[in-house]
Length: 47
Image 1 (cartoon, rainbow, N blue to C red):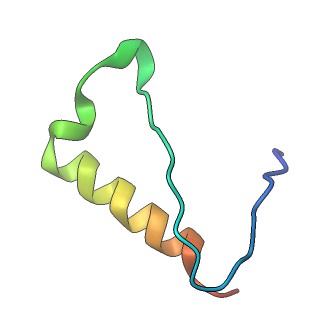
Image 2 (spheres, rainbow, N blue to C red):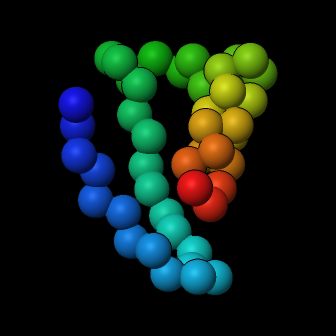
């Protein structure tokens, strides 16, 4: 299982870049875009 480094700074703003396999434009499709948004929100929720 991967161990992710996470910075925990209340109120901080983060920037990250996402690339898909072979840079396919799958995140322009609404269901995939919404799934990514949900995943980001879930990771940001307190444990």
